[in-house]
Amino acid sequence: MVEVSTAKRNITPLFPMYMRGYYMRTGKSIGVLDELYCRTLVLRINGEIFIWSTWDLCRLEEPISDYARTVLAGKYSVPKENIIIGVIHKMKEKTEIIARPFTENM
Image 1: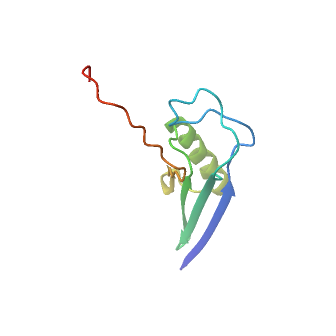
Image 2: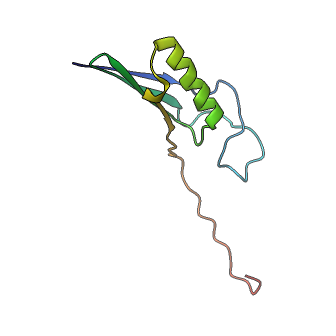
C-alpha cells in the first residue's frame, strides 16, 4: 500500500537580506519579487516512510541539510537515509544585457 502527502511552506525572509548571485549589488534585498518555498513529498510504502524536500535556494550547505535530516529523522522516526533535501534555483527577473565597446586592450 502506498500513502502520499505533500506540503508547501513559504520560507521567504521577512526582512532584507544579502542575496547570493548578485555580485554587483552591495546592499541587502529590497522587497520581494517572488516568494521562496519549501515543497515536500512524503511517501509511506508498505509502512516505510520516504521524505523528499526541495527548497527555493541557490545553495544549501551540507551541515544545514544534515541537521534538517537529523531533526526530521528523530521527529518522524524515519531513517535518515530515507530523507532527501535538495535545492532548486529559479529566476524570473529580467536579465540585463550590457553592451561594452571593443577596445584595443581586450
